[in-house]
Amino acid sequence: MKIKNINVYLKDLGNSRPYKIAFKTVSVVNNAIVEIELENGIVGRGSGNPSEYVVKENLTSTMEELNKVDFIVGRDIRQFYSILNDIQEKLPKNPAARAALDIAVHDAFTQYLDIPLASFLGQKIKSLPTSITIGIKNVADTLEEAKEYYGMGFRILKVKTGDDVDVDIARMKKLREVYKDEFLIRVDANQGYSVADLTKFFKETAADNIEFIEQPIAAKAIAEFKNLPDNIKQVIAMDESLINPKDAFVLASPPAAGSIFNIKLMKSGGIYPARQIATIAEASDTTLMWGCNNESAISISAALHTALSYTNTKYLDLDGNLDLVEDVVSGGFEIKDGWMTLTGKSGLGVTGH
Image 1 (cartoon, one colour):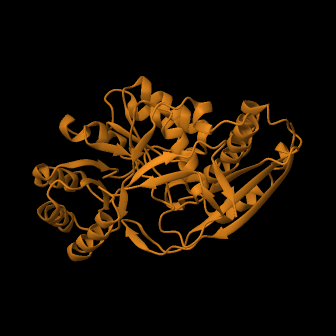
Image 2 (cartoon, one colour):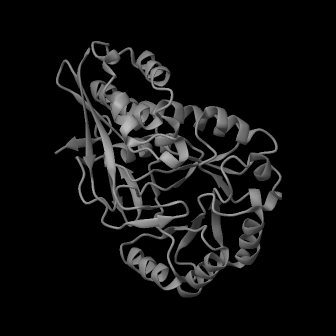
């Protein structure tokens, strides 16, 4: 069954809730969309939204590369792994472009097989709850947004920090004072702390039951991570430090840099390399978290299918499509009270509009 055609376009999906993190404010959500059509009419979909600060790729270069991927047209979709290897080799500097194409190939192939992607990957987990993100805000606005999410049924907050450690500590304490144990709280500093800031935050929030601290210090400060006390490393999730399988090997090699890997398809370059990272995590007893940028439900669904295929997946942070003004697809998963469940439809389970 040959790949007949590839369609690539850029779509602004809009953002109903702009937010601030340690290094930028997110107000626009452009995604690169890929559609792969097979001879029998099956359409596999992929999407990509790079984080330039993390992977040095912008949407202009993403689109430029995706408009040069005719090398897979005419290929038999049953040459699945050969095609995936070629994608990784021919687009070495553009992980979001690789991800969009890789996801579309996975979707087309598993639709061809008429099974959900998760079934093909070996689904191990039926459902997990996702966190929902609060950007860097003052204490009052943090509490107001938390109240809104509580009313929507979410019970896991991921709170962005990294501007001012003292304000961050105050926000944690006030959240705990108001909500007691009604929320699980995770923190993401996006490289905003020094080691001294991290140590202060860890000690002063010890009684506030913070589940973990994501990427608190600079991505390249691997030696500093590895030299942290074990009790701090046990609550460290690696994000910007973890781009590819080679990074996973370095981070997991003793002494480990943290206890959690945050895998994002937009960093790794798609499902295929993300699974390589997950395999290294399994072998090193590292817990998995699956995250995202601001993305279409296409790539959020792809991450969820993959996440539920690993027994060491413990955390989801797949809220990247919840504040979109519009999307190019529907379906893929269901979400109720923060819990994400697949629909059981073939491929990614998404339907184009």
